[in-house]
Length: 142
Length: 71
Image (tube, rainbow over all chains, first blue to last red; front, side):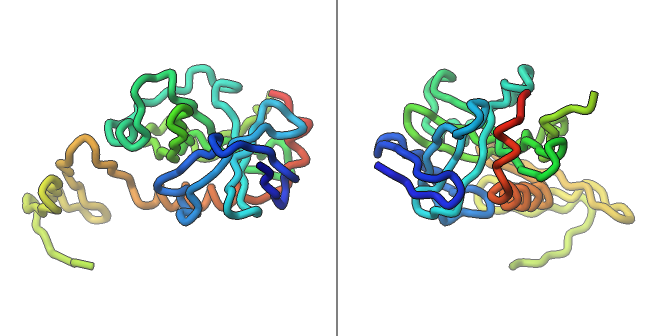
């Protein structure tokens, strides 16, 4: 199937690729169905795009691309909500906030997107860990 | 919206499982103890607002620079 998007062109996907955010994404709660597609132009990133709103898309990055020690616990309620049965089912991504200055492009480590890749369920989890920032710069000053 | 007054040491019960006790009242802040089941998420409201604001910002912007970004 083809998803026509405003910013990312046409994204190809299958019905079974659709990921459901039962609670939506904070700030955009009415949109529940998304796909994750490769970001054309840089394989480090992916696109999280709404299938119902052709203007609603986000850039994702896997935190382990830049912070191998990133870790947090999933609460019992998230495990239940996402129907997680074992850790292999879970993928974690962070939303990227863009900026015209490359040094100001940041990843949201405070609120990761947690996906059960088998059950196609996802949720944006807000962590209380103070180490993790909402605006974590991807490019470090030397 | 229910607005109540509580004195130090007094408590509120929300539903069957959540209890909030006023531990200490200071000049600018009140210390609260929250007793809730493991499954209930408790977050500072300003943190949720910050995430909403960041999400809105993240949903916009030019993707061009990302093409050259190497980590």
